[in-house]
Length: 357
Ligand code: ATP
Ligand code: MG
Ligand code: FE
Figure 1: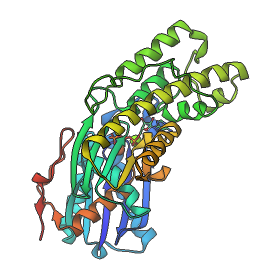
Figure 2: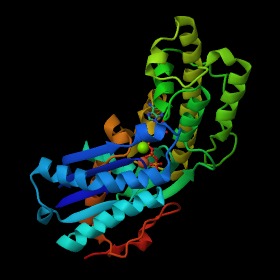
Figure 3: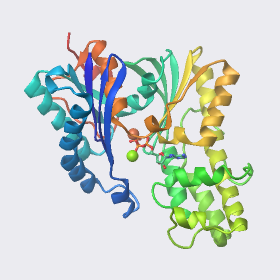
């Protein structure tokens, strides 16, 4: 079965083709430089860019794979969560293709797609504990199958990626700044007493990261010479004198540790709650983080679980994960009618699916 995947939920426009669980081709256009000028994603610009770029990416994908729309059995589209205007561009495009070709339409939960993405690189083992750490979400799930996710815990305020980006902004790194913090963090040992591990002294599986950026803001206010005075870029980071670089690296390493260890504690707690699982799947942009990867490797080892981490290009938004999730759902018999709705936020549950066969 060949499935086209369409991703337009935020600031990446992406398409991909998956056949029988394997990736045949993918195309991606990022808008990140455009939004960086504003220090965050501007929804109206994002929608307009998806509208402009998506048809070209679709044509390039067909050229790359040598396939025509008639060869495609299903069109999977990220139907939420995300920016409403952006989602509507992808959902409408997918509906147009299905209407014209008779392909099956499959609405995909963008967050589930993040967690299923590593299925393109190896077999997923269920039941799994899923940790999604992305720009907009921090969720833990019990994943029983590609069509059965139970939400266990979530952030009450900032997502892990948001915590990185807001903290990076305090330090005057460009948006999105998670990568800059991580790169510098690798050069130093963390001071584990510098920042708190937020919201761990309670029995819940939920997260709260907003206090962590305040802790960094307070630290920076007390040590203003630590951070860049104006917005830095990669060249400015490279030009830092060694002593300032070492001091900043220590702050970054300490922040990395606080986030990673908080995630570790909550994942350990979730594992205790759900009982036996076969694997731990960690996905989303923050799964690219060195500290997070290391912490999760430790958890998996301690619990005798297989650790499933997507390669870096599958961590951030892409079309391949949507195509793959759609392929899993389509082969399990799921699909949607042409009245499929975009769901910008809130829960997207299997109950609002139709079985197509
Ligand atoms: P969502 O899926 O929740 O709507 P998103 O798809 O936009 O959000 P992703 O693309 O998965 O989010 O992740 C982007 C986030 O990952 C950004 O916040 C970015 O700073 C962060 N990020 C990327 N690389 C790293 C890294 N090495 N360390 C920490 N954070 C990182
Ligand atoms: Mg993005
Ligand atoms: Fe995403």
